[in-house]
Length: 202
Image (tube, rainbow, N blue to C red):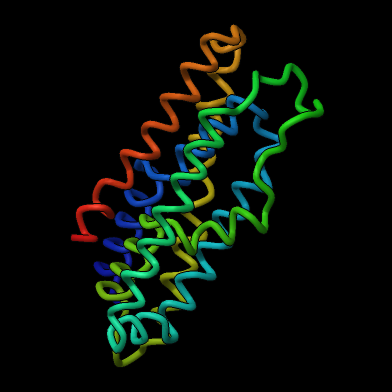
């Protein structure tokens, strides 16, 4: 992979990973509600799940969508339904735990976070765009592997910033009324992230 393409890929991976989206909004909310340590499996699930998704897209899923475009519509509908359910769960989350080992509601697990990438519209857009722009046909598998490695190296530190930001808000949100407003706001932003998907369903 040429150096200029590698640098462009790294910048794309950083911007795509650090900007708001379903993963980062959920990690922000998890940082607030569960703390950094308990959110680590969630973060690792996002990171490793997305790398796996990139590899799967590269070895055949993109071609499948091109051959059967209706499958992409089905994926969008399933994604919207699941995201609506997640927004409801966030809006109705309980009060913040004062201990990172407290009982009650639990943060998303590694496997659940990894599986979530397959119904995350932003993850699909990132994976399909990266595959189209940053792979070289003459060395496809090599550049696909480099792309997956770059995203793996950049994604987890980027999303960890959102969890850390959530942790920083914990003291401010100890009041139950404030955390309720925060959870409603996170649910609303998660729904807002669906707007591009809904427009694409027309």
